[in-house]
Length: 328
Image 1 (tube, one colour):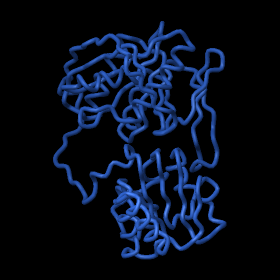
Image 2 (cartoon, rainbow, N blue to C red; image 1 turned 120 degrees about the horizontal axis):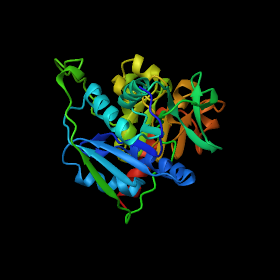
Image 3 (cartoon, rainbow, N blue to C red; image 1 turned 90 degrees about the vertical axis):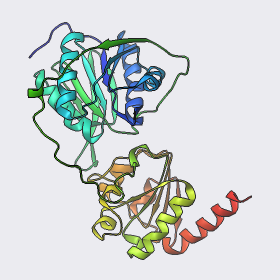
Protein backbone atom coordinates (compact mmCIF):
# COMPACT_ATOMS: atom_id res chain seq x y z
CA UNK A 1 0.00 0.00 0.00
CA UNK A 2 1.19 3.53 -0.77
CA UNK A 3 0.70 6.46 1.62
CA UNK A 4 0.64 10.20 0.91
CA UNK A 5 1.09 13.38 2.96
CA UNK A 6 3.78 11.77 5.11
CA UNK A 7 5.61 13.72 7.81
CA UNK A 8 7.65 13.25 11.01
CA UNK A 9 10.04 10.53 12.15
CA UNK A 10 8.92 7.31 13.81
CA UNK A 11 11.36 5.22 15.87
CA UNK A 12 10.55 1.64 16.79
CA UNK A 13 11.98 1.16 20.29
CA UNK A 14 12.96 -2.41 21.08
CA UNK A 15 13.05 -3.35 24.76
CA UNK A 16 14.78 -6.03 26.83
CA UNK A 17 13.44 -6.81 30.28
CA UNK A 18 11.09 -3.81 29.96
CA UNK A 19 14.03 -1.44 29.33
CA UNK A 20 14.83 0.28 26.00
CA UNK A 21 18.00 -1.15 24.47
CA UNK A 22 20.95 1.23 24.09
CA UNK A 23 20.82 1.07 20.29
CA UNK A 24 17.22 2.36 20.35
CA UNK A 25 18.15 5.24 22.65
CA UNK A 26 21.07 6.17 20.39
CA UNK A 27 18.73 6.12 17.39
CA UNK A 28 16.29 8.44 19.15
CA UNK A 29 19.06 10.99 19.66
CA UNK A 30 19.88 11.11 15.96
CA UNK A 31 16.18 11.09 15.04
CA UNK A 32 15.65 14.14 17.25
CA UNK A 33 18.53 15.96 15.54
CA UNK A 34 17.17 15.23 12.05
CA UNK A 35 13.59 16.10 13.09
CA UNK A 36 14.64 19.52 14.40
CA UNK A 37 16.45 20.28 11.15
CA UNK A 38 13.32 19.34 9.18
CA UNK A 39 10.83 21.03 11.51
CA UNK A 40 9.25 17.68 12.40
CA UNK A 41 8.51 15.60 15.50
CA UNK A 42 9.80 12.25 16.73
CA UNK A 43 7.19 9.59 17.49
CA UNK A 44 8.52 6.58 19.41
CA UNK A 45 6.66 3.26 19.29
CA UNK A 46 6.79 1.04 22.39
CA UNK A 47 5.13 -2.39 22.34
CA UNK A 48 4.77 -4.40 25.53
CA UNK A 49 3.39 -4.24 29.06
CA UNK A 50 4.50 -2.44 32.24
CA UNK A 51 6.68 0.02 30.34
CA UNK A 52 6.21 3.09 32.57
CA UNK A 53 9.93 3.36 33.38
CA UNK A 54 10.81 2.74 29.75
CA UNK A 55 8.70 5.71 28.62
CA UNK A 56 10.73 8.04 30.83
CA UNK A 57 13.99 6.96 29.19
CA UNK A 58 12.48 7.21 25.71
CA UNK A 59 11.42 10.82 26.29
CA UNK A 60 14.82 11.67 27.76
CA UNK A 61 16.52 10.16 24.70
CA UNK A 62 14.69 12.43 22.26
CA UNK A 63 11.07 11.35 21.63
CA UNK A 64 8.44 14.10 21.44
CA UNK A 65 5.54 11.64 21.63
CA UNK A 66 5.25 7.97 22.51
CA UNK A 67 2.75 5.60 20.91
CA UNK A 68 2.24 2.85 23.47
CA UNK A 69 0.66 -0.48 22.55
CA UNK A 70 0.08 -3.11 25.22
CA UNK A 71 0.91 -6.46 23.68
CA UNK A 72 3.03 -9.26 25.10
CA UNK A 73 3.55 -11.25 21.87
CA UNK A 74 7.09 -10.38 20.75
CA UNK A 75 7.06 -12.38 17.51
CA UNK A 76 8.07 -10.47 14.40
CA UNK A 77 4.65 -11.03 12.79
CA UNK A 78 2.89 -9.49 15.81
CA UNK A 79 5.02 -6.35 15.83
CA UNK A 80 4.80 -6.16 12.03
CA UNK A 81 1.01 -6.05 12.22
CA UNK A 82 1.02 -3.44 15.02
CA UNK A 83 3.59 -1.21 13.30
CA UNK A 84 1.73 -1.44 10.01
CA UNK A 85 -1.48 -0.20 11.65
CA UNK A 86 0.36 2.63 13.41
CA UNK A 87 2.14 3.73 10.23
CA UNK A 88 -1.14 3.75 8.29
CA UNK A 89 -2.64 6.05 10.92
CA UNK A 90 0.28 8.42 11.66
CA UNK A 91 1.98 8.40 8.22
CA UNK A 92 5.63 8.99 9.18
CA UNK A 93 7.99 10.04 6.38
CA UNK A 94 10.93 8.28 8.05
CA UNK A 95 10.99 5.07 10.09
CA UNK A 96 14.05 4.13 12.17
CA UNK A 97 15.05 1.28 14.47
CA UNK A 98 18.19 0.21 16.30
CA UNK A 99 19.96 -2.41 14.19
CA UNK A 100 19.46 -5.57 16.25
CA UNK A 101 18.90 -8.88 14.48
CA UNK A 102 15.23 -8.57 15.38
CA UNK A 103 14.96 -5.12 13.76
CA UNK A 104 16.88 -6.31 10.70
CA UNK A 105 14.13 -8.90 10.24
CA UNK A 106 11.30 -6.48 10.99
CA UNK A 107 12.24 -3.33 9.06
CA UNK A 108 12.44 -4.89 5.56
CA UNK A 109 9.00 -6.44 6.13
CA UNK A 110 7.62 -3.02 7.08
CA UNK A 111 9.25 -1.47 4.02
CA UNK A 112 7.68 -4.04 1.71
CA UNK A 113 4.23 -3.39 3.17
CA UNK A 114 4.45 0.21 2.01
CA UNK A 115 6.13 -0.47 -1.34
CA UNK A 116 9.45 1.06 -0.40
CA UNK A 117 12.87 -0.29 0.58
CA UNK A 118 15.07 -0.22 3.66
CA UNK A 119 18.68 0.64 4.46
CA UNK A 120 20.45 -1.74 6.84
CA UNK A 121 23.39 -1.16 9.19
CA UNK A 122 23.33 2.64 8.80
CA UNK A 123 26.33 4.28 10.49
CA UNK A 124 25.72 7.93 9.57
CA UNK A 125 22.82 10.13 8.47
CA UNK A 126 22.86 13.61 6.98
CA UNK A 127 20.43 15.92 5.24
CA UNK A 128 21.07 17.15 1.71
CA UNK A 129 18.16 19.36 0.75
CA UNK A 130 15.03 17.26 1.10
CA UNK A 131 16.99 14.00 0.96
CA UNK A 132 18.13 11.88 3.89
CA UNK A 133 21.54 10.44 2.97
CA UNK A 134 22.45 7.25 4.84
CA UNK A 135 25.96 5.83 4.99
CA UNK A 136 26.18 2.03 5.08
CA UNK A 137 29.30 -0.19 5.12
CA UNK A 138 29.54 -2.74 2.31
CA UNK A 139 32.01 -5.50 1.37
CA UNK A 140 32.71 -6.31 5.00
CA UNK A 141 33.13 -2.67 5.95
CA UNK A 142 35.94 -1.96 3.48
CA UNK A 143 33.77 0.56 1.57
CA UNK A 144 31.26 3.10 2.87
CA UNK A 145 28.30 3.61 0.55
CA UNK A 146 25.92 6.60 0.64
CA UNK A 147 22.30 5.62 0.08
CA UNK A 148 19.26 7.77 -0.75
CA UNK A 149 15.81 6.18 -0.78
CA UNK A 150 13.56 8.12 -3.14
CA UNK A 151 10.33 6.35 -2.14
CA UNK A 152 8.36 7.00 1.06
CA UNK A 153 8.57 6.16 3.83
CA UNK A 154 12.34 6.01 4.24
CA UNK A 155 13.03 2.92 6.36
CA UNK A 156 16.33 2.13 8.08
CA UNK A 157 18.02 0.22 10.89
CA UNK A 158 20.93 1.88 12.71
CA UNK A 159 24.15 0.12 13.70
CA UNK A 160 24.74 0.12 17.46
CA UNK A 161 27.28 2.73 18.56
CA UNK A 162 26.94 4.90 15.47
CA UNK A 163 25.46 7.82 17.39
CA UNK A 164 25.81 9.13 20.92
CA UNK A 165 23.09 8.53 23.47
CA UNK A 166 22.15 11.94 24.87
CA UNK A 167 19.65 11.79 27.74
CA UNK A 168 17.95 15.01 28.86
CA UNK A 169 16.57 14.21 32.36
CA UNK A 170 13.87 16.88 32.39
CA UNK A 171 12.44 16.05 28.94
CA UNK A 172 8.88 14.70 28.82
CA UNK A 173 6.13 14.45 26.22
CA UNK A 174 2.75 13.04 25.31
CA UNK A 175 1.90 9.35 25.61
CA UNK A 176 -0.68 8.09 23.11
CA UNK A 177 -2.17 4.70 23.93
CA UNK A 178 -3.33 2.64 20.97
CA UNK A 179 -5.46 -0.48 21.37
CA UNK A 180 -4.43 -2.82 18.55
CA UNK A 181 -5.42 -6.48 18.59
CA UNK A 182 -3.36 -8.83 16.47
CA UNK A 183 -5.55 -11.39 14.66
CA UNK A 184 -4.53 -15.04 14.87
CA UNK A 185 -4.11 -15.26 11.08
CA UNK A 186 -1.38 -12.57 11.22
CA UNK A 187 0.91 -14.94 13.15
CA UNK A 188 2.45 -17.17 10.50
CA UNK A 189 4.86 -19.11 12.70
CA UNK A 190 4.49 -21.16 15.86
CA UNK A 191 7.23 -21.35 18.48
CA UNK A 192 7.49 -25.00 19.47
CA UNK A 193 10.53 -24.79 21.72
CA UNK A 194 13.41 -22.49 22.59
CA UNK A 195 16.83 -24.10 22.96
CA UNK A 196 19.46 -21.99 24.67
CA UNK A 197 23.12 -22.82 24.35
CA UNK A 198 25.38 -22.42 27.34
CA UNK A 199 26.47 -18.78 27.65
CA UNK A 200 23.69 -17.46 25.42
CA UNK A 201 22.75 -14.89 28.05
CA UNK A 202 25.83 -12.79 27.26
CA UNK A 203 24.74 -9.34 26.14
CA UNK A 204 27.61 -7.97 24.07
CA UNK A 205 25.55 -5.19 22.47
CA UNK A 206 24.76 -3.58 25.83
CA UNK A 207 28.15 -4.16 27.51
CA UNK A 208 30.29 -1.16 28.50
CA UNK A 209 33.50 -3.23 28.73
CA UNK A 210 34.39 -6.11 26.40
CA UNK A 211 37.56 -8.18 26.50
CA UNK A 212 37.99 -10.18 23.30
CA UNK A 213 40.38 -12.99 22.49
CA UNK A 214 41.59 -14.11 19.09
CA UNK A 215 43.74 -16.70 17.38
CA UNK A 216 46.80 -15.31 19.16
CA UNK A 217 45.64 -16.83 22.47
CA UNK A 218 46.79 -20.17 21.03
CA UNK A 219 44.69 -22.68 22.97
CA UNK A 220 41.42 -23.06 24.83
CA UNK A 221 43.36 -23.17 28.09
CA UNK A 222 45.09 -19.87 27.30
CA UNK A 223 41.74 -18.33 26.38
CA UNK A 224 40.79 -18.63 30.06
CA UNK A 225 43.08 -15.61 30.62
CA UNK A 226 40.68 -13.51 28.51
CA UNK A 227 37.82 -14.56 30.76
CA UNK A 228 39.86 -13.72 33.87
CA UNK A 229 40.71 -10.25 32.55
CA UNK A 230 37.08 -9.60 31.67
CA UNK A 231 36.05 -10.63 35.17
CA UNK A 232 38.60 -8.33 36.81
CA UNK A 233 37.49 -5.44 34.59
CA UNK A 234 33.79 -6.05 35.26
CA UNK A 235 33.23 -6.72 31.57
CA UNK A 236 32.04 -9.49 29.27
CA UNK A 237 33.99 -11.81 26.97
CA UNK A 238 34.09 -11.41 23.21
CA UNK A 239 35.87 -13.49 20.61
CA UNK A 240 36.97 -13.56 16.99
CA UNK A 241 35.86 -16.20 14.51
CA UNK A 242 38.98 -18.41 14.90
CA UNK A 243 38.35 -18.62 18.66
CA UNK A 244 34.75 -19.65 18.00
CA UNK A 245 35.73 -22.23 15.39
CA UNK A 246 38.32 -23.61 17.81
CA UNK A 247 35.45 -24.15 20.26
CA UNK A 248 37.20 -22.08 22.91
CA UNK A 249 33.94 -20.25 23.66
CA UNK A 250 30.30 -20.40 22.42
CA UNK A 251 29.32 -18.61 19.19
CA UNK A 252 27.13 -16.15 21.11
CA UNK A 253 30.37 -14.35 22.09
CA UNK A 254 31.51 -13.67 18.52
CA UNK A 255 32.20 -10.06 17.56
CA UNK A 256 32.38 -9.09 13.91
CA UNK A 257 30.62 -9.11 10.58
CA UNK A 258 29.18 -12.58 11.15
CA UNK A 259 28.73 -12.05 14.90
CA UNK A 260 27.68 -9.12 17.10
CA UNK A 261 28.17 -5.43 16.32
CA UNK A 262 29.34 -3.78 19.54
CA UNK A 263 30.16 -0.29 20.81
CA UNK A 264 31.42 -0.49 24.40
CA UNK A 265 33.18 2.28 26.28
CA UNK A 266 36.27 0.04 26.49
CA UNK A 267 37.29 -2.76 24.12
CA UNK A 268 40.39 -4.83 24.93
CA UNK A 269 41.60 -7.01 22.06
CA UNK A 270 43.90 -9.84 23.16
CA UNK A 271 45.75 -11.76 20.48
CA UNK A 272 43.47 -10.24 17.84
CA UNK A 273 45.17 -9.45 14.53
CA UNK A 274 42.44 -7.11 13.29
CA UNK A 275 40.89 -8.76 10.23
CA UNK A 276 38.38 -6.57 8.43
CA UNK A 277 35.50 -8.86 9.39
CA UNK A 278 36.29 -8.39 13.09
CA UNK A 279 37.05 -4.66 12.90
CA UNK A 280 33.67 -4.00 11.29
CA UNK A 281 32.02 -5.32 14.44
CA UNK A 282 33.94 -3.28 17.06
CA UNK A 283 35.13 -0.12 15.32
CA UNK A 284 32.43 1.90 17.12
CA UNK A 285 34.08 1.29 20.52
CA UNK A 286 34.91 4.49 22.41
CA UNK A 287 38.37 3.34 23.56
CA UNK A 288 40.35 0.41 22.15
CA UNK A 289 43.32 -1.34 23.77
CA UNK A 290 45.16 -3.91 21.66
CA UNK A 291 47.66 -6.58 22.77
CA UNK A 292 49.51 -8.40 20.00
CA UNK A 293 53.06 -9.60 19.50
CA UNK A 294 53.02 -8.55 15.83
CA UNK A 295 53.73 -4.82 15.75
CA UNK A 296 52.36 -4.63 12.18
CA UNK A 297 48.98 -6.17 13.08
CA UNK A 298 46.08 -4.14 11.60
CA UNK A 299 44.44 -3.92 15.05
CA UNK A 300 47.04 -1.30 16.02
CA UNK A 301 45.74 1.01 13.26
CA UNK A 302 42.45 1.47 15.15
CA UNK A 303 43.71 1.11 18.74
CA UNK A 304 43.99 4.05 21.12
CA UNK A 305 46.63 2.14 23.09
CA UNK A 306 48.73 -0.69 21.66
CA UNK A 307 50.83 -3.16 23.66
CA UNK A 308 53.32 -5.09 21.55
CA UNK A 309 53.87 -8.39 23.31
CA UNK A 310 52.63 -11.93 23.83
CA UNK A 311 49.07 -11.63 25.21
CA UNK A 312 49.58 -14.81 27.24
CA UNK A 313 52.37 -13.05 29.17
CA UNK A 314 50.85 -9.55 29.20
CA UNK A 315 47.36 -10.42 30.47
CA UNK A 316 48.52 -11.83 33.86
CA UNK A 317 50.50 -8.62 34.44
CA UNK A 318 47.42 -6.52 33.62
CA UNK A 319 45.27 -8.59 35.97
CA UNK A 320 47.84 -8.17 38.75
CA UNK A 321 48.01 -4.39 38.32
CA UNK A 322 44.24 -3.96 38.10
CA UNK A 323 43.81 -5.98 41.30
CA UNK A 324 46.38 -3.77 43.04
CA UNK A 325 44.42 -0.66 42.07
CA UNK A 326 41.12 -2.18 43.13
CA UNK A 327 42.57 -3.13 46.54
CA UNK A 328 44.05 0.31 47.26
